[in-house]
Image (cartoon, one colour):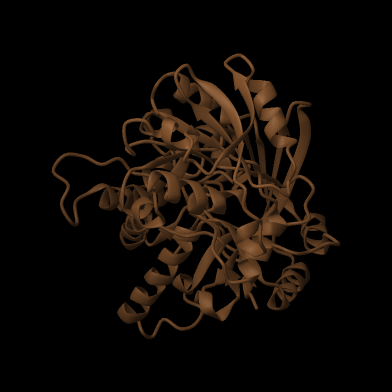
Length: 426
C-alpha cells in the first residue's frame, strides 16, 4: 500500500517562529481577494506570495504571478527567511479548537510526511470526490514555476489504537506554534529518531489512505511528476517530485470534525424557489421556519432522522427556512449521501444544474458556514441555498473503497493545517 517517508522540511527559521501568525495563511482555496490583500500587507515574507500570488496587468508566459512566486521563493531562501531542515523528519501537527453550541474543546493531531505518488487505479491512495479542471491548471503553473509544495494534501487512515501518533508524540521536538484567525491553536513538532521514523513508515504499506481534502492537488502532483520524469529521466525513484506532501490523521481521532459544505445557487432562471416549492417539485416540506428562527431551523435539521434524504432550503420572498425531504430510498455507498441526492435528484432534475453544467458554468457557490449562507440569501445575493447535514469520515472510507465519487465539496474537514508551517522543495 502507501509508502510514507520523512523529508527535509522547508520552514521559517527559529528566529521567526514568534511571527508565525503574520507569515502563514489558511488553505489557498478559501482565501478571498480581500483576504489575499490583507495577507500581502501583513508581512513581505508571508507565504501568500508563494502559495497564492497576485496577478498583475500585462501578464505573459514567463512573466506572471507564478514567475513572481518563484522569484519570491528564491529571495526568501537566499536571505535565510526560509531554510531546509538538515535531517529528514516527520512533523507532528496538533490543532486545538472550540466547536459547537457548548464551545467544546477538541484536538486533532496528525503528522506531515511525504507519500509516494501512485495512480488512482493502483488503489493506494483513494479519492472520494469529483474534480474540476480549473484548479488543476492553476496549481500546475505554480508547481512548474516554483518547483515547491507550500501546503499538504489532507488524508485519513485507520489506526484504532492510535499507535502511530503515540509513537510520534513520544519522540517529538517542538518547533512552531501560532493561533489563526478562527482561534485555532496550531502546534508543530519534528521527529527524527530513526527507530520511530522506521516504525511509522513500516505501518503504512498495509494501510490505505483516503483523501479528505486535496483531490485537485493530488491529480496535479501526478501530472507534474510525469512531466518532470520526461525532463529528467535519470532523477531516480526517490526524486522529490515522485512524492506528494501529506497531512495524515487517523479517522478514529475523536477531535476530527467533518462539516458539510452548503450550496448557494444562482444563474438558473428567474424564480428557482418557485420551481423547488411548486406542485411539480419532488421535494416535500417537513417543517418551515420564519426569519428569526435560524437557530431552531439548524438544530431541527441536525436532529432530523439520518435514514431519510433531507436538506435545509433557504429562499423565497419573504425569506423563509424549510426542511425538505426527497422521497427516494437511500442506497449503499454514495447513494447514502444527501449531497448525492441533492445533485442528482434536485439540482439536476428540477433546476437542470447537471454535473456537466457545474463543471463548466458558474452556477454554485459553496460555504461551510450556514450562518454565512443565510446572511447572503437575506441580503439578496442569491435566490436559493441548500443547507446540508455533516458526513462522517467513515462514509468517506466506504465510498472510496467502493470506487465511487461524491459530488464536489461533499465534505469539509475542519480545521485544516496552515499553509507555510512546513513546506517542501520538489
